[in-house]
Image 1 (cartoon, one colour):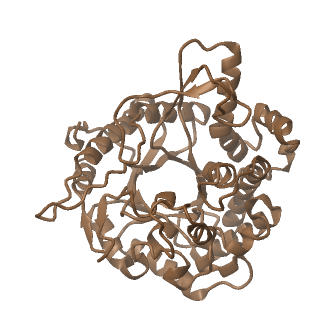
Image 2: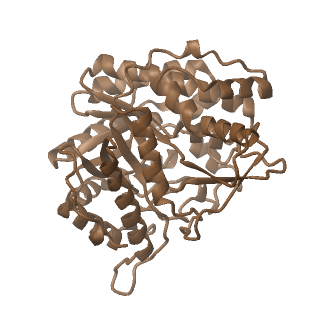
Length: 454
């Protein structure tokens, strides 16, 4: 399928087309200057943790090229730009005085977006926790939640009159499990008890930071960005297997949805955590969640297909009867399967659970490592097809009554792709990592054409 083949339809008048980035990936870390260290700087220093051995990342020089990047966004016809603030850039160490030059950078960025008629969509935390806060336990420590709330309040004071869309956290599941259970993301911890504590404190952090934002910016629209999964089972779902499937759903989806939007937890996961770690999570400790559910962001790349017959392998701790199963044969260069219908199914489910909640696809995209041809053109055919089938699936959810309000491509720029370093490219704009030259890929050109047509 091509993007030109997506049928026209009447979109909501407030529908936003956009692209997304994150601070560490495009700005770089401590080595890029004018910021404190964060947990990704620390992880990059551990041999073997980053596949291409990147250390001292300077990102893609967005700090110096931000106006050029905003001009690109404008030229592509995008309505909105989703970006994140680097906590250690605006408050080195995560406590105490704020760095005025760091705040000035984001002020200029926001002003530049508004001057170009582009809606800012601001995320407070996209994984770059100040190193000093990890030293006191990171997100497992309630004190870090209090400091995050203070940081959120200050950012709302500084930017609340200019920015409407606020997200407290990006993909807390990744912070909890990839960072503190599997250890493949920063801070590189492998401990279930820590992951359990982090999961709980992140829910609290969203609630408290949301209230802080609304206190200083009453008209702000505050939400959270979650990486959720649609789940599909192959074969006969026995009662025992369904119990495992329900537990997997709680780990991946319901802990965050119920915790952050309803102020309660799935009891099967509370009991599982108590059984495995002895930790008793008190859902009464969740603060008032009413301030942070103006909208929900969904990050989605690939679905989850499961089957029975597990032999001790745990999809999640406490689930031993379930194995993963392949779904389709089309894989991106990073090895992720194409599951566009899964994204539509997920949107329909979310709309059923929360019928009045505006939904935004805040990240969706594909890794294909195409380089320019002899003419300088980047004809990323597979990414073009991927975007076409996924965007078509997303828009078709409108026909089912889904309260869909926007779609953001991931990513605007090729950048530092976490544990893969600079070896994987998700951008709709190609970046030459030696010269930092930006070139819009054919997928970006087609995305622009699609937006103009719809």
